[in-house]
Image (spheres, rainbow, N blue to C red):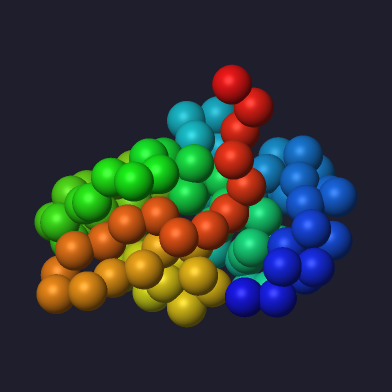
Length: 100
C-alpha cells in the first residue's frame, strides 16, 4: 500500500467515517473511492490486535459486524496490506496504531 496515500486520506478521517458509518457502527456502503476506502479499512483494522493470529472464520465474524459483504472487506484489507494471510490464518500487517 502507498503509505502516503493513507496518510493523506486520514486527513479527512472524521468526515469519511461520519459519511459511511451508521450510529450502529455498520457501513452503509463500502466506499468505491480508494482514499475513502482506506480510511474505512484503517478504522476496521483497529479491531485486529497486533501480533494475534485469526482463523478465517473469526475474521469473517468480525467483518460481518461492519457489512454483510465481509468477503469484500477481507479482500480489501489484504489487498491494501492492513491484513496478511497464509493458510487460512490472518494477522494485522498495517494501518495506524491508536494511542494508548
